[in-house]
Image (cartoon, rainbow, N blue to C red):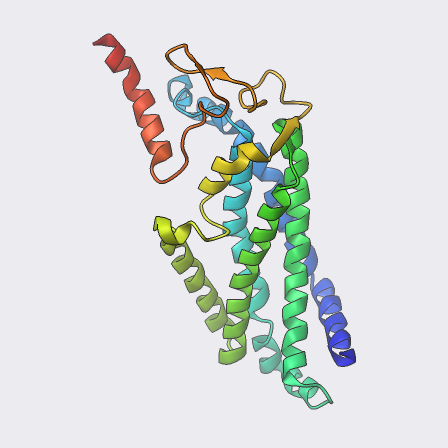
Length: 278
């Protein structure tokens, strides 16, 4: 255990000196800040670029959109960062001969690999923590404060990123090549994205395309944030009126986000004026 603690401290110091830890935290912090901002201002961006006639087809931003954007961005940029951090963990030390020098000491291979994997997990955990705090803060300001259940979403995101990092780490250990490890990690990422298309398989993945985050995001909102008053989606707990003028239950105006829900919702709204003319 003492050797493992020494090796772990060595790995953490090395990640800090090589700027891998600060770079990872900076990237995750950018993802955490940009996710609620993109969810909040996407309709305005579309209106400025495409015009008001297309902006009306976009649903009003909701709390679930911020959570969904966070999950989607973490599943993309976070997974890429996990692969980059893990691809040279062992392969680089094999090429430089550092691994052979360390293993010549009274240190076992299990301790050597465990220290690297723990340091990699700690780096990812620090990044996810920074991203989660940023998303929580900006979502509270722009929409509504999230409930503690958001911690479960962040924890599942960390688990998913650790899976990609572990797969790449194993490839780096077995092949001894940084390029082969990176290729293996990207293949795993592509396969996971392709498999998530199937409902029965994609439904159990902690990091998907954000549809589950949009569907469950309404239940994560505790109370409106300081900037949520008077905006669409600022208070998900109040009933609203549908297109026919009738009062609907809370959350009924939220389009379904499973499968082709977004496309179907936009298509129906686009055809509504033509039906009314008839």
